[in-house]
Image (cartoon, rainbow, N blue to C red):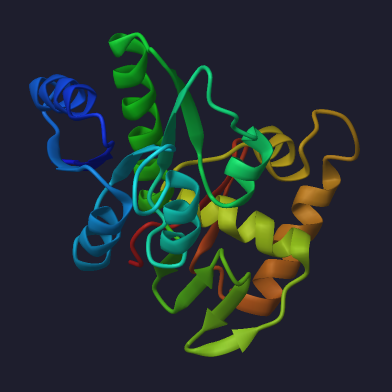
Length: 224
């Protein structure tokens, strides 16, 4: 269950948002000023923060700038129409979105769900793929065989990543070329050239990268 922090000094608005989000299946916490919210964020994890701009003790802009180094969750600003709010500054200090008061509650719910879905996809995206003795880190673009670092060109690494992400699936040369080289035009022969290079560096015995005659290539999912 996703946890949402609602920070707004207008208690009626905070409670309205709270009721709606609970009905949508979220767990919520309400804080009515920036200082209390700051302490809450320091001690607890949230999946999204709804943050009013005009508040006593510490306004939303100040709070957002203070918490960005302790939480990476989406932050949606709530701002009144007659409030002077520089959107550029808001985004620069770490806000992900803003909603103008008075708002349509269905729009607020939709925005909340969209940001949580996007954040969850980002979290779930794998950084490390490992099959047998071969391991890649897509964040650092490093490749290892038997825990020994192997130097690959950028294109070789992108090809290996595509093969490993689709391990167990037969991929045609056309699929590989379009996905890795980003085009349906050009010399499709570069696929075979780079496959050969990967085999020389990582797979001399062709245990991992299999040629499926007449169809394409397959990176094994489980070693035989």
